[in-house]
Length: 268
Image 1 (cartoon, one colour):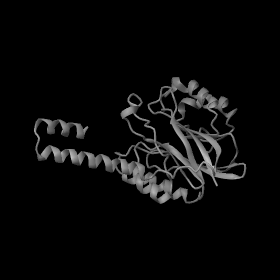
Image 2: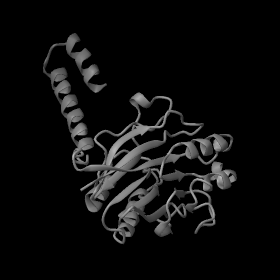
Image 3: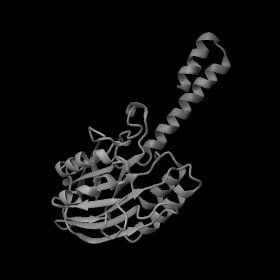
Image 4: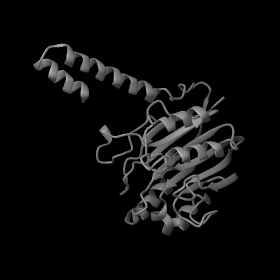
């Protein structure tokens, strides 16, 4: 947009000032693209990569009660092996239906007194823990280890506060990074970060943890204008697990975020 405005100014007045503004707009835009691509994972080596699991992460919006039954239907039919839900209250009444397909969970009464964050799995946990990383919200960090036929993958479900609430966003990321130290090796971390990876604290977090994004991240907010929105919901991976594919789910089902569906591969 800045480039277009500067370009229009240049057409009206062909002098140094608008030309300089056009150059600066291009430089700033190029730097932003570089920052977005800096934490991309290396391309998957298809000859060494084996499909491992299907993964769903979705902030369903806490006051989206009418969408609860349809969201439960989608989760059950998704084919995902592991599901992360943020703001889980709308599916609280659907727990019995969901657990018939995903019998192992954290949240919504499993190690919590809240039904805000939840983590669901078709396979048993080798280890599962719930933490409070936020000064504001409780139980918004869930960590689990799951064995996929001899390949152990760690999972972290994260929901951060909005980055303009003082320095809470940075505090939470520091706490999350500290908890991840106890889960070395292959990891899939996902959730609602309420910010793009352009933020300084997220970039510091990715450097510290070694987590990486997919080659391209879909925009997940605002749902009305995804073409010009931002990727504020993320899927990160590290170690021998890589993101084979990453896409928005086709329907927000009443949420103010798009969910993300991903194919995770294991790279030998």
